Amino acid sequence: MAMKVEVVSTETVKPSSPTPSHLRNFKLCLLDQLAPPFWVPVILFYSASNNEVAANSASVTGNLKTSLSQALSLFYPLGGRMKGNTAIDCNDEGALYLEAKARYELSEVLSNPDINQLQQFLPFSSDKVVPNIEEQVIVGVQANFFDCGGIGIGICMSHKIADAASVSGFLTAWSEISLNGINGKASLITPFLKASELFPPKDVNFQMPRRFSSREKLLTKRFRFDGESLARLRARFGSATPTRVEAVTALIWKSAVEAARKRPEWNEKYPSSIATHTVNIRSRMRPQPLPEHALGNLWQITVAPLIDTNKGVELQDFAGSLRKSIRAIDGEYLSVLQGERGLAKAYESLTAARKLAESSAGKMELYGFSSWVKFPFYEVDLGLGRPTWVCTTGFPIGNMVFLMGTRCEDGIEAWITLHEYDMIEFERNDELLQFISLSL
Image (cartoon, rainbow, N blue to C red; front, side, top):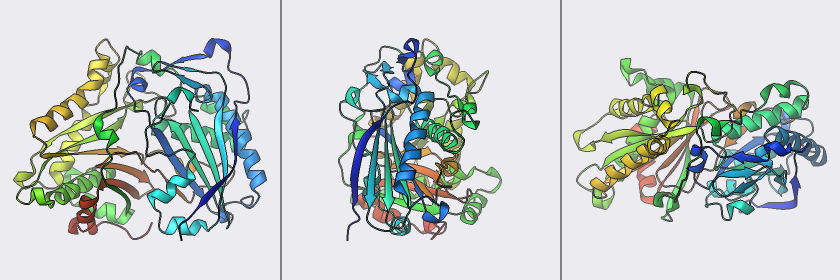
């Protein structure tokens, strides 16, 4: 029987204090202007055993709404509304807050999560482009109460103002307010809201890349790697010593290319391949790194050099290509991004990827990777204890991979979206199967 989630109440939560008039017009930075109009979705699941108040939905809801209201006052742009592709009207109209009932056990979700079922725990569908963006809230929250006493908190934040690090920073602030109040420890996490001063907005005519709007048959599945399997995987690289993320990315990229090779139209040769990877630029800013809770789309896409898979490449080749591209996002790169050539620099990687794809006459696979591994989602305690499980539902993009951390901190979960035929072959990959964990 399909799992059903029923929304039982809908309301708006407004900031606890009004935004001063001189802060009402919040400028988007250049990188916000270029961000796609999607939701950034995160779901945090809390087991009943983690807290004593899980069964009392009224108590939980009261605390969640009060602390959410206070968090919106700190992150005041999130309580406003978009003004085209240039600014946010910080009018304090607030965030959407839904309460829902899940008439089954949380354990049923945790034992076999399904991407389509997980969408029900979110206030908005994350697999579609956001319509009428100026009429939408910027933040939506859905509190889901399970029969067993467990709770799922789903949050969607507009990608036009926030990346995954921004969502993590907001959740951290909300967590600290829930536990300590607005005048306690939470006062230490005043957000950085000056991205537009570092990356001034420009006259941008942005159109959604076609690949983001694909309606081909796609499958999204979760693959888990525990600490022991990651140690074995990294040992495969010898003296190269890749990070956990680099090692997993290389393995997934290589396995996906090998799956694509088995399509009928690729029955003789491997396709060539490139990969993109999102890079969080906060810690890379010079002369002063930005705080991790800085609000905005403070990331860049890097393009790993073309892999000619006709030449029998190994894991080390994929990892080396990836590492080289990530290291190119350095102080010099970011200095140009902040200057007059900022818009051209921001387009540079995407333009390079498009030209490579066009020159290959369609015989090349492009894979996108985004790592959320370092974000402290498992420290988000909204008065419910630490989450039992945290996940995302991703975006409507084929050949896309999201890497998440795990509760035990040393593992990685990969949410992988591939075309249906490729996914079938991907799951059979012998090398991949050596490192996938049955449980975490």
